[in-house]
Image (tube, rainbow, N blue to C red; front, side, top):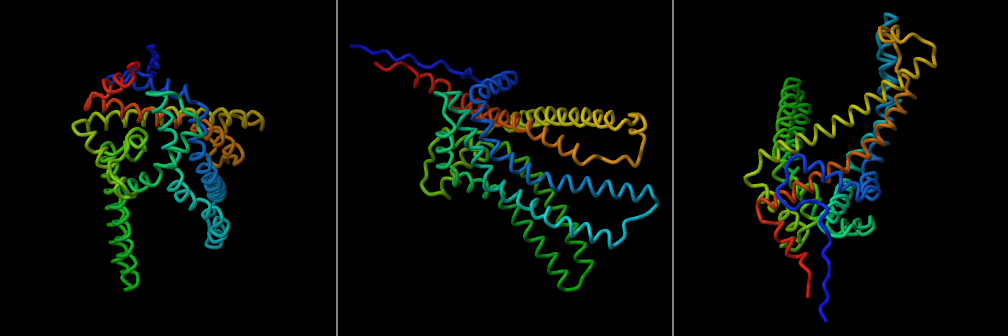
Length: 344
């Protein structure tokens, strides 16, 4: 008896993709996994936003007080500055937790979201629990890949910090100034260099390759290196195209997020002005106008939710870039179609 298994219809077109296809298919992948992707990225973004919010609100509160002092013809004295520093210490501690949380949790969220997108594109849709279980198996090699990628910038930062501390210990104010300025310049230059290299390594740094390919090496360090080498080889000859597409995607996502944020701020400000009975024109022209901390906090909450909705699209787009590269470089579309042929 011959049993014919009907292959699953692909969610995306397996061929080199144009810009319009990238955005179209990214939305399709997101729609197929909306709840799971939203929750996966919420684990990363929501705590980051909540930890950052107290610092932003405290900054607005201090700006309001400074504006009030300036309008009254006074300047903040040393006692006022010290009081604000004391009040800000708990907020600064919370803000310091942001990069730590981001370092440990973001790779897990990216891997989970990428796995969901990859499965929706090429195989059967996956549950959030299964995607998270898979992400845990690829977590440490991904962390190694990120650490190796960021290591040169970290070493540069440590070297410049040591030079500044050494100059300070020697009592050389000129040396402190020179090494501080030189450090800022070199770190900024290094950060730019890392950003320019990102298109060559995005597949490994975002967890995209990890979700489709088994490493040819054993051991966490060897696997992390393998993923970086694989990403570099796969992007060979397509750097400018990847750079342009990634920049376009970044600006598109940032434009939508910023637009919604600004619109929300303006609407809430209009509501605040109407409720208070003030004149909108006078409020605009008033240099001492206070920003309501509660209104700003509400605006930040709305923007946070919008960001949580939009961020997974970014991961879907990068997943499609990986598929596009493999179709162009390795006839990936033919391999997948052959794997989908019914078995007899």
